[in-house]
Image (cartoon, rainbow, N blue to C red; front, side, top):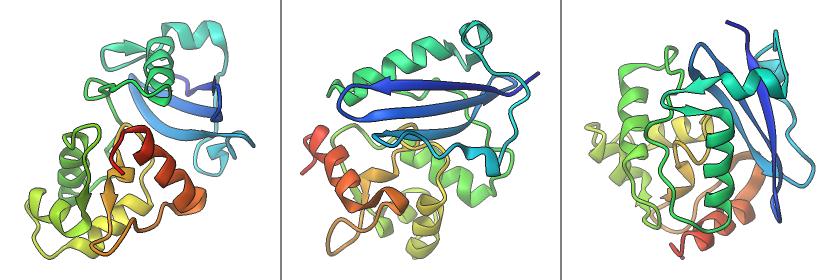
Length: 174
């Protein structure tokens, strides 16, 4: 199956991008005013387009349904994404455990890196959970923004702490 790339716009946030292949999401770029940098350094799309994307499913949802959920999330509506199938074939058992645990952290709640490590079954692996979050391909669906440092918010990759703060404020977690 071809890689499908689906761009979407969210009012007040910008343009994001979803990448899907073989019924699983392989990448998600959060919406920004500048638009996505395109994950082309990681993936080369074989086929793109609205018509193709309408038929693509990621788990139990189509790409348009996922975009509607994401727009709802960015509009401040608590939204779940557990039924969206993610491509985690690259992940170690530790990374799977962290991803699964993160997907279970409820909207509007936060955990520290140490708490996340313990909840995932790997106490004292807080640095490794931080590394996982820094490399997270599935922002919002694997909500690393809900993971904070023991002494503050922590970081949020190239989008920065202001974006993380905005997400946590959206969820009323701050």
